[in-house]
Image 1 (spheres, rainbow, N blue to C red):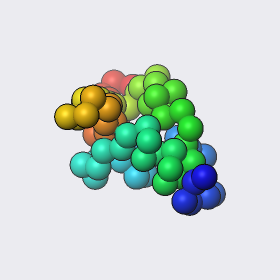
Image 2 (tube, rainbow, N blue to C red; image 1 turned 180 degrees about the vertical axis):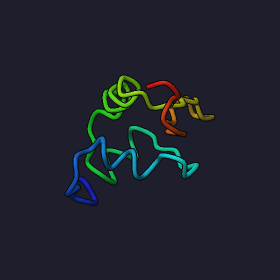
Image 3 (cartoon, one colour; image 1 turned 180 degrees about the horizontal axis):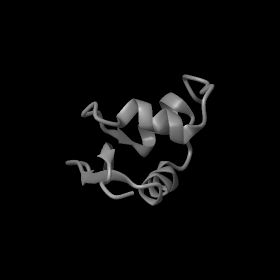
Image 4 (cartoon, helix red, strand yellow; image 1 turned 90 degrees about the vertical axis):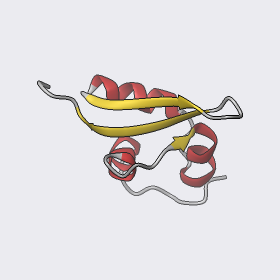
Length: 74
């Protein structure tokens, strides 16, 4: 059950929430807090749209995702 109902598309929310803020998000956090079930797919879509998506494994082995900026020449 999600904590927040998103009123904007998931990709738009993720861009606003992560881009240039230094925040990171795991799949579990995205699902439980925002109802985003497939974060990996949304991050792939952002990459295809030209955003620089960083992934990093944390100490538990879970992947953290961050969006730093739009890539140059796209």
